[in-house]
Structure formats: C-alpha cells, structure tokens
Length: 489
Image (tube, rainbow, N blue to C red; front, side, top):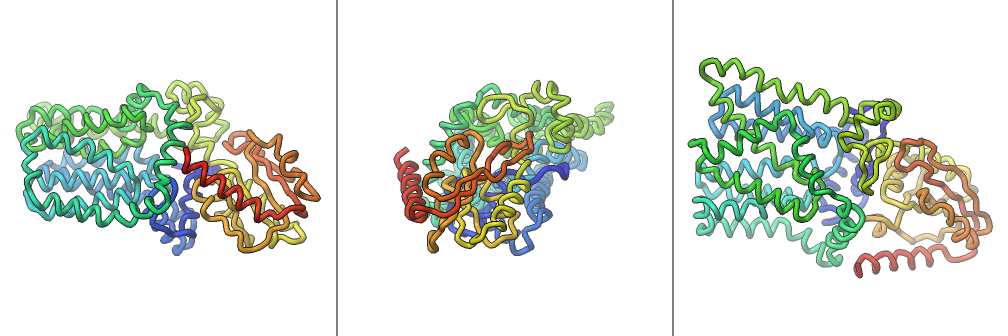
C-alpha cells in the first residue's frame, strides 16, 4: 500500500508526539489518539506499530459488518459480499494512516450495529453499550456527533420513536455524558480550543470545499460497492424483513445533508457507509439465491475487487513521485491533485505530506550537533508537522517546538536559550534574516529541504547564534500573543 520512499504523514508525527504530553484534550482532537500513541511508544515507536493500530481498527470494522450481517440473518454469500465490499474500498487508504479516522469509522459502524441489536431485542443493555461506544468515538473524534444528529430525527420518523419513552435511554445518555465529561471539562477550562480550531479550519480549508466535490467523493469511496449501498436504500424502504430498520434510510439522508450544509471534508462521512453495505449485502444475497440469479453471486462478490484495481493504482502512495508526474492527467481528472488551497499540485496532498520529513530531521540534527553549545539552543518550527517529524527522528537531546497547534502549550522555558535553530516554511523565508538576525551576533541560512515533491520543499533551516536579547522573554510574549489571538478569533 505504501512505497518505502514515503515517510509518515504530517498528522501522524503530531499524534505520536502527543504521547509525550498526555492530557484529557488537545487543540485539534480529543485524547484517544494520544493514548494509543503512548502504547505505540511503549512498544518501541517503530513504523510497524504506527501502522498496526489503524490496520487493526480496519479489520475490526470488517468484523462488525460481518456480525451485523449475521444479526440480519444473512447467508454466507452476504457475509462474503459485505466483507469484500468494506475491505476493497477507500478504507484501505484511511487505515494506513495513524489518525483518528480509522477508529472513527469503527465507532460509527459499531454504534449503528448496537442500534440494530436494540431494534431487534429491545433490551436496555444495548442502549448502555451504545453510550459506551459513543463515548469512545467522542473521545477519539468529535465527528461522531454528526451520527446522532442524523439518527435522532430519523428515529422520530419511524415506529422506533417509542424508545424516547424509555427511561433507560436517558440513563444511557447520562452515562455517555459522564464518560466524555473529562474532555468536556478540559475544553471548558482551556477556553474551548476546538471551536477556535474549527474557525481556523473553516477559514483556511473548508472555505475551499466544493459541495459537488463532496458528493462526488462519496461515490468514489466505495465505488465497487455502490450497487450494494443503493440496494440497501431500496431494501430499507421496500424489503419486508427490513421494515423495522427504516430509520436507517432517513439517517443517511439527514447525516449527508448536515455534512453538506457545513461544507465538511469528504472523508468525514466515510464511516457512514459500512453498515449500509451490510444491509445491501443481505438483501442482494437473498434475491440472488434462486434460479439463474445465483450465477450472479460470484459476479457481485468480484465487483468490489475489480473496481478496486484502478483505485489501488491511483489512490495509494505506492507509486513514485516521478511516476505520478508522468501520469499527471489521470490523477488530475479524478481531482486527486487538488489540495486544501483549492489549487492543483504535482502530487496528491497526502502524498506530498509524506515526503521530506527524514531529510529535514537529519539536517536539523546535523546542525544541532555542530554547535558549540547545543544544550542552550531552541529549535523553533513553523508548523506541527516540522516539529513532530524532528522529534520523531532525532537522536539528539532536544525537543523541537512551534507556536502551531498543540505545540504552543508544550514550550518549556525552564532554561535560558542563547542560540536558535529556526525552521521556516518557504512562504515566509525571505524576511527571516532581516527580522530575526538583528537580535543575534550571527545569522545564517544553514540548509533547506531539497525534495521538490515534498509539501515542505524549500523549507529553510536558519541558525542564529549568540543572542543579544532575552530569547525566553520574547518566546513567552509570542506564546501569549498566539493564545490571545486564538481566543479572540
């Protein structure tokens, strides 16, 4: 799935570094990913373990779909069609990255499974299980709130609304609130940074989201199983054994409408579909079990695999940057070269975010080692990817920091600094010597990222020696200014 010439992805470095700063919350995400990162750290912090956990969550998603099909009394053909449809999809890309998204999909699928179990049994225990699954999902990624936003009005439109009269529903909701309360309290005492993060995300990224592009991506995520999902929607309306699950028909419509209204990123909705693949697989297996239609069973199972082949060749970082450049038109036609800035680039953004990090860290290490007083040197980066990558790969006794994302809360000024290694993105590098140089006796450009395909291409490493001012005081002022700006946005 991943060519060895690619490094980890930008966000993965931040999440791995969060293991060194465990808390009940962070600027951009809840704490679950950091807890998993701490386990990865205990296991040695190697790339194998970084990739193991998202792969595990992907495998568990298939397991939940399998158990859902069994709950719906699906046949072996249904089980194979459901498992194949979930496996050979965009989830394989999602589950190669150590991000909250892989566990998010698992939690969406599991919570829907719990709802089905409750519809079938009416046993209150499933309401409490649902509260626990929701809490895990919430502590992993706030995105799961959209599941409830779409599900509750859907339930109100069907006979399943009787659950609203049951006290166990409200006790389960209380349990869920209790489980997520530490993170909610962390948000409260820290000024709800999630809202500031969302405002920044809206201003810099979501503003470029095209609603038609969002819908197009929904078709591509599970393109090989699109017929299964469409069959599920039909079955939820007209297939008699599914009458009690009609709320799921309305749930997908309401949830997608909310995502479209808020101009969400396309992959936010990727966890919505596995449960519908389960419904569709059961329905299709039933109508294909007799007569000449049974010969279509292997065709249906093969469809996700056949459609996955071109996806494998284009949507995964298993091709060199040179290959992608030579076949630019194929990638561009599918919109894969379009970044969050709304412009087309040489590589897909995720791929470009997996290049240049080892090079950057190696060069910073080399510069740091050659200083006469390395212990009195602060390594300050422009963004969390730079700081996280340097901290992941370095074998020196320092921690890179930044005013970006969670790093602004992790800058410790408990020792005086006399030198500064400044990692500056290309967009702002021209003024760095003029702005910072006068505060030091020596100022020079030491190196830069030279990989032309990396998103960090031309990121420059400056070395400033012999401070003329109190570095710690100026850094503290910058921290205060950054935090105040975030609060007042």
